[in-house]
Each structure stands twice: as structure tokens, then as C-alpha cells.
View 1: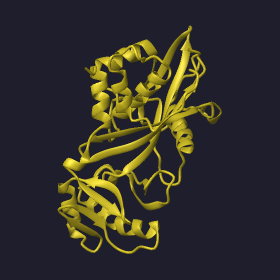
View 2: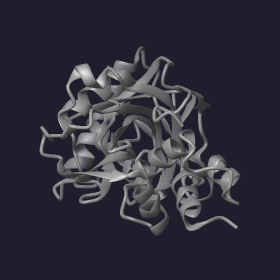
View 3: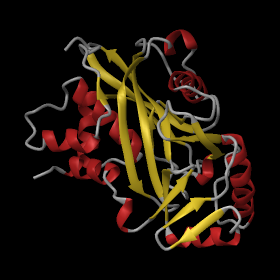
View 4: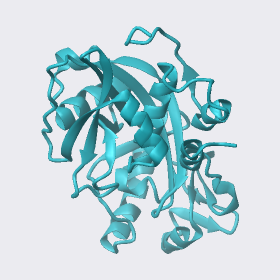
Length: 296
């Protein structure tokens, strides 16, 4: 039987939108999932969206992603002015069939959850040895954050905005959130990608997270630069494993990224009777095996 941690991982990765949400297609491709209550708002723009009982489609024969984006932007801005869409970020994200595929359209980040779009993020596990004991740096999100205020998070994490790569996002977020300069951030290793898929208040959170590990110097102290972090904590791996099992208040995505890291570095092992269920729930996109940076 799965442990509580595995159940939480399953809850954060395995939501099936097909039973309760409507498919959203654009340029002939399935790009998202909408609640029927949100889809009803789109009926006010029949020239832009086809809203039917079986799904929603972006109408029009557009010449480019920019033209599709322009058609959608007017709708999104109107819905935001009505407070149907909340948490405006003034940051665009790319919608595509896959991360490396041609863009279908660009959309304001705040709207992505309402449309149930597949988004991408970069997260960083920051590891350090202290007196021979492996530790990890955690961040506590500022109370002013629109999403997950006050929750425990990776030292740096961020949605990949339009025009950015996973590594560029990692470099940007590492400095803004933790003051990790480029010289140190360049030591981060790409370790794979995991899927996060769950129902949220706005609609569907569906994100592919590019994961990275970095070993920081023992004397490094993170310093937040953008006001989005309330505090940092350097906690032993042993204690973090206990916090995960006890249900500490991590963001769902940070929990997934940390559990993935602990599996890769053999702190979570096949001694668990739900080990295979935990790995399956994480839905790893690829498994990049390499020796632990802690020498295990």
C-alpha cells in the first residue's frame, strides 16, 4: 500500500481532466482543458472561439502564432478586467505541441491555468555538505505571492517565459530568487524532467518541470533579490525526508522535484514497498543516471 508521501505525489501528478473538463484545440491540435464554467465566458466571442458541449476551438485561419496570439489577447484582457482571470503577471508564455515544437500561440501567464495549457518550468535543487552531512537549501515563499504564499519551495524555480530556454530561466531565477551568481549557477546539472498535473482553483495545472542539481559552497548564503522569498533554510537530507513523509507544507511542484532528487541520489530506495508506485507517479520524462554528487 502506498505511503502518505506517495499518495501526495500521485495526487500532484495524476489528475485526469477528461472526466470533468472540456478539450481546447487550436490550429487543429489539442492544447488544453477548460472547466465548463470558464468556457461559458468565451461564448461572448463567437468570432474567436467555438464553444460546444464536446469542446472549445480557436476559430480562424491565422497566418502565424503572432496572429493567433493577437486574437486571444483581446479576450484575455477583457476577462481579466472582469476579474474572471486573476493574478495578471504581464508575462507571456508559449503554447506548442511540445517544448521544442513550433509555437502555436503566446498567452499571458495568468491565463494558462484557466485554459489548462501545458506549461514548462525550471527548478533547482541546491545541495551542500556541512560537516560531512548532506543538506539542501529550501526557500519559503513570500506571503505576497499570488500562488502558494508562505509555502516551502526549491531554492530557485520559475515558469519558462516566451523566448527563454530552461537553462536561461534557471540562471535568471537562481539570481533573482537566491542571489546565485552565474559562476555558481553554471555548475548546475540538468537531471531530467517530471510532470505535474493537478486540478487547481483556476482550472488545470499541467506543467513539465526541467530539473537541475547544483552543489553550493559550504559558506554560501542565499540572498533574495526580488522580494519573492521570505526566508531560506539549510536542512539536512535526513530531516527533509522526514518533513516530506510528515506532510510539511511544500508547494506541490517543489515536493515532486525534491522527491525526484532523493530517488536519483539513492536516499529514497527500493527498500520502500511502494518504491515502484512512487517512481511511476512521478512520470519521469527521461532518466539521466549519473553518480551522486555526494559520492554515494
